[in-house]
Amino acid sequence: MTAPVLVFGYGNPSRGDDALGPEFVRRLEMRCADAIACGELEVLTDFQLQVEHALDLRGREQVYFVDASAAADAPGHSVYPIEAAHDVAYTTHALSPAALLQTYDTVVGGPAPAAFVIAIRGEQFELGEAMSEGAAVQLTAALDDFVGRLGRLGGRTPATT
Image (cartoon, rainbow, N blue to C red; front, side, top):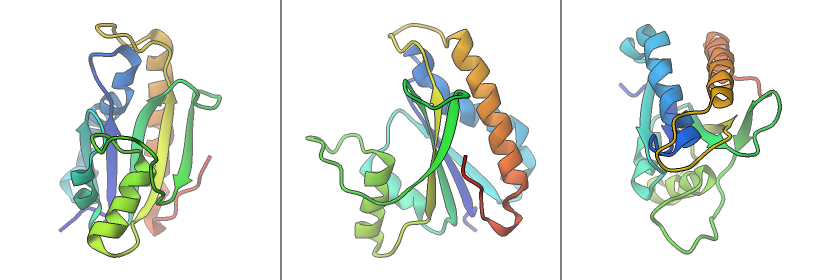
């Protein structure tokens, strides 16, 4: 059985606050182990979104893409819905969440699941840096918000912030 909710954290753990997506997933795994074990929630991480990840969306009701952002809204993180859209990138090695949804529509042949971005404000993204103190604070706030959101997902209708 495919879990109805997928949380996909992406970013480079070697580039300071770019690790926010994967670290969000790591902490979520610890806090929501029961939901994962009973098949209500699945988590994935990678450095970037790729065409092949479209297949990970099959059978989902909701997908949350978690990433670091240099421009996330106050209070340090934001959650917003996204829809399928074509990227105007020159490469297919990395996709935006919207482009991944478009790929799903094309490859699977149907509308993608409801999708949301969780953007967490980061401050430093240099190679070899540790996560900044400010980003760690924002990560905790975003995770607390999301765990509360999961608690309200009985009808699978999340509130956006």
